[in-house]
Image 1 (tube, one colour):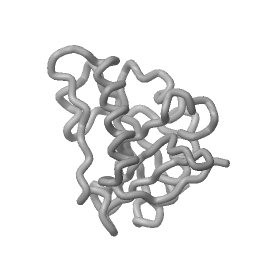
Image 2: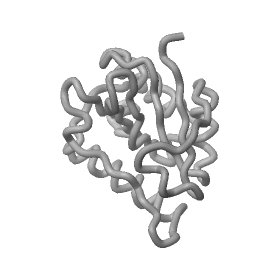
Image 3: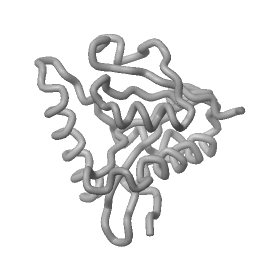
Image 4: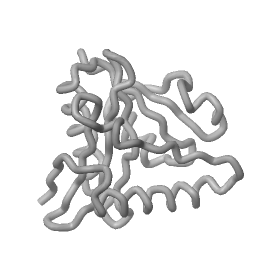
Amino acid sequence: MLTIAPADLSSPEVVALIALLDAELSERYPEPGANHFRLDGDDVGAGRGALLIARWGDEVVGCGAVRVLDPGTAEIKRMFTLPEARGRGVGRALLVGLERAARELGVTRLVLETGTRQHEALGLYQSHGFRVIPLFGEYLDSPDTSVCMAKNLDG
């Protein structure tokens, strides 16, 4: 059974998932200067964001976070599903949970950045109602590898 629950960014399970995410991104984007955009504990603190972990039974299979950027907008960060758990609805369940967390934080718009070579992620986000937007913030310096997307939560 798949469950989605809050987690601590510094927990060993989350640290291990983020390390696997960074390793996968390094393989997909080996060119010099590729950036994996970090997430800090303050970003997911009470009232500022949330970090969720996905479990299939007792096995940790994925994670994702949301952080408030401004009073109306939050950003999805560090979405990851273990390769062996992909195609089983983990990413979709994490997105639903993150959307719920964003609403609880009072935001009406979600934004995110993903990579141009992450076709699975692009498909997941598009199927979940996200649309491509111009690059923003820290992603402005990576036009060849970043795709930014947004979804309004008020409709």
